Structure formats: C-alpha cells, structure tokens
Length: 291
Length: 256
Ligand SMILES: Nc1ncnc2c1ncn2[C@@H]1O[C@H](COP(=O)(O)OP(=O)(O)OP(=O)(O)O)[C@@H](O)[C@H]1O
Ligand SMILES: [Mg+2]
Image (tube, rainbow over all chains, first blue to last red; front, side, top):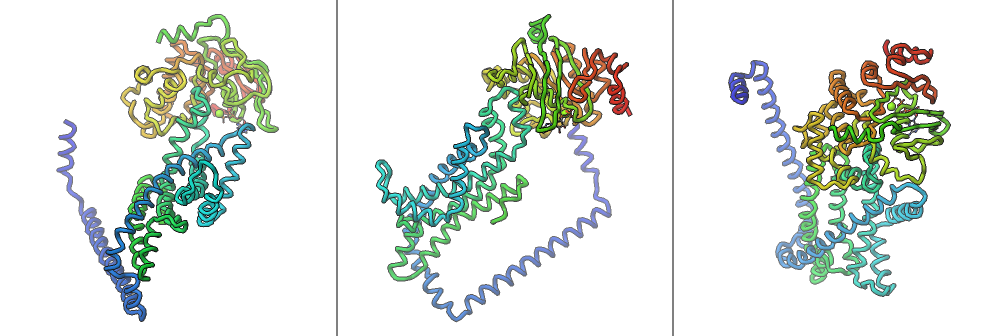
C-alpha cells in the first residue's frame, strides 16, 4: 500500500526548470574534466616515453633490461622463486600478528607485577624499530646458524624469516597498541561494571573494537612485508630475487630483475588498492599515506 | 517480574547497602569527605548536588570502579571495601548505567544485553538470548534486537543500557545521570521506565538533575555538598521544604 503510494509520488515528480539547468551544467562539467584528464595523461605519458626512447642509451638499456625472449625464458624460474616469497610472507604474517598482539597487550598492562614484562616489551620494540631490516637479516641470517643452538634449524630460510618476524612485529605491535589505547576508557568501565574481569573486558570489549580500527594500517604493513620478503635473498635463499640473480648471471642480461619487479607489483598493487578501498569505506585517512 | 521483585527484597528488614565514613580524593582534591548512607531493599535513593560535588564518584565507589581512601561500604551484609573481596563478583551483582550509555558499538543490541549473562553468569547461549529478548521486550525494544547501538536514538540507547544492567537480576541498580545526555523529548521515555522499575521493587541509587522525577520516585533524597551528605530526607522535605541554606541555594539555581 505504502509502496504504491511512494511509487505514484515518484512518477508525478518532474524536475523543475532550475534542477534541469543544474543537471545540465553538471553533465557538461563532468565531460569537460574527463577530456582534460585524458588529454593531460596522454601528453605526460607520451612526453616521458618519448624522452626515454629517444635518449642516446635507450638501445642498450632495452637490450639488457627489456629483452622479451630473456623475459620469457627466465619467467618460470622467477615465478617459482616468487612462490617461496608468498609462503614466507604468509607464515611470517601469521607469526607477526601473534607476536605483535602479545607485545602490545603486555605493554598496556598496568600494575607492578607486569613491570618486568612491560620493560621487556618496551625494550624489544625500541631496539627492533631502531635496527634497519637488512642489518637484522644479516645478523640473524649469518649469526644464527653459527650459534649452532641445538634444536634450532640452521637453514638461512628459517633465520631470514625470523628476522622479518622480529623486525615487523616491533612495528605492528605499536599499531596494535595505538588501536587498544584508542578505545575510550568508558568502554572498559562499562565492561567491568557488568562484572567482566580485566581479561574478559580486553578480549570481548576492547580488542574487537581496536581490531577494526587497525585493519587499514595492518594491511598497509602486509603490503610492505610482501616486498620486504625479497630481502632474504641476500642470505642465498632461492626466492624470486635470488632466482632472477641466477638467471642474470648466465649472460649478464638484467631482464629477469624486471620480471621479478613486475611479479612483485602484481602481488602488492591489488593489495594496496584493496587497502585503499577498505580504508576509504571506513572513513580512515591514515592508511592512504604511502599509497 | 515478580520473581525479581521477591529476590530483590529477599533480605527484607536489613539494609542492602551501607556507606559509613566513605572518603575519596583525587590527588589533593578531596571529593568525598565523609559520606554515610543506607539503602533498604526496594528503596530508591536519589543523590542531588552541584556539578563536581562527587555524585558520579560516589556511585563508582559503590561499584568498586574506584577504590575508597577510607570508610566502609557493606553490600548484602558484606564489607566490599575489604581488599580481599572479588570486585568482579560484587560488580556482577549490581547493575550500573552511565550518563553516556557506554554501549558496545561492535555488538548488536542483543549482544550487548547478553554479554555478561554468557561470560559472567555462565548462562548458556540460547537461554541468554531468550532472557535478553524478554528484557528488551520489557524496555519496549524487542524489534531492535539486531540493530547496532549507533543506529538507535539516544533514548533507545539508554533503554538498552538499562536492559543490559538489569538482565542478570542485580540486587542494586546504580544510575548515573541517565537522562542528562538526552534530548528533552527523549527524557520522558527513560524516566517512565525507571518509575516502572521502582514500582516492581528494584532497588536504585541514582543521581539526577530532574527534580520533578526525583520527587515522584525517591524514597529518600540526599543533597551532596562539600564531600558530605548535607541534607537528607523525604523528597517533599528536601526538595519541597529544604532546611539548609546550601540546599535552598542549589535548588533555586537549578530551577532558575
Ligand atoms: N578520575 C579522576 N581523576 C581526577 N579527578 C577526578 C576524577 N574523577 C572525578 N574527578 C573530580 O572529582 C570531582 C567530582 O566529580 P564527579 O564526576 O563525581 O562529579 P559529579 O557530582 O558527578 O558532577 P556532574 O554533575 O557534573 O556529573 C570533580 O571535581 C572531578 O574533576
Ligand atoms: Mg557525574
């Protein structure tokens, strides 16, 4: 009944003179902006492309970096290496989430009993945020196996992954901590007033709200981990970059590096777009900063 | 409802809550100096007092959300200011409602109402849900069970908050200025609900700036001033015919 009614009202409505003029003006403006955007993009890309192609060294660069046959022949090896990067990334990401959440929770605990834990958490975060990732990879990747700890694997893959986990967790822990602290204290009060314990309030009231808020920055860090997983190539782990290096060494043609670069972008760009979309949907403006 | 009413008045004759010599300060700022107060089961005690006089602080001390500096609070005959008392257990027997509702935005309405039933009172999920729905029906919001708190009006949110505090049959309800964040036309629906609860025998300690409501519902009105209960008595006495100069000054200020 009410549906019919609204349907009739909608049919009766005709845009007024003023509204038709506005719509017309908006349509013209949209068209004009589209034409300008397309024209300026073409001009820019054409100019840049022309400058590169007409440069004196282009011939040589094209042969060493953009050799189609070399790209095709090295592709399977590099792709196989990339599969290792993907696996490293997934395993590391799970470990990073667990470790960083633990560190973040420890750092927000109060009371004297938690003091040593808090101190440990703070020291860990400070140290590992201060160290360049490459340095951590070198130190652990070469130093770790040399320790010869019983029960610890000696593989560079393990120690390289550990370096990634330790470095990233220090950053991600700070993301989680900021999320936890952004939940208003009145939420904790409400939880406690219902008789929930400290832990229950954290688990059922604070963390679910914090989690939502940190998803955009976490996705951002995941994008970053995707590419940084390539750094363990310096330990000789046969990932995409190392495979490209091997292919390159055959004939000093650098095309495999470009292949690896394109493949990495194929991983990170969709992820970055997804992050962007999600963040915009949630009205979050912090994550787009690096994109 | 009669079941709750009888459980609330179970300890009839003896007081449900007693504060004696309660003191609370924040740093150098003494908010509560020496507060004495008793509440009988089924009674409604209304705190009035100027902004900053410590009404909210008093409720939070009773709920053990603040630790008192001195004095004793007994609840159901037990000293709950004893540091060995399990605060979570005490809080689970009281219901607290906040000025700003403090609903959990990540849970739907029924999730808000049943959280403590499931986690604290060990009620199995299906049973918790049906009790939650009955309680929402009680506050007139059963059709909003699956809504998010943010999609409700202020008055509806506050009624959900009351349902959340009430669902586990607390022995005592603490209500901290539950209408002061509401638009004037929404105040009535919340006050009507409280009046009904009072009629069902729910014991309440609340503070409010709604003097008309206080007169209707209170068994005892306490005027809090300078960290003490400066004047107390029946609403007709304290609000209608205050004896103390300070009380008169306060009342004329909020009526102006
Ligand atoms: N956590 C705290 N830390 C420091 N000071 C506090 C804290 N909580 C309350 N106070 C102070 O205690 C005093 C009493 O606050 P309280 O909120 O109890 O007042 P109130 O009577 O509820 O006032 P209102 O009517 O405005 O709600 C205020 O001066 C306030 O600044
Ligand atoms: Mg207050």
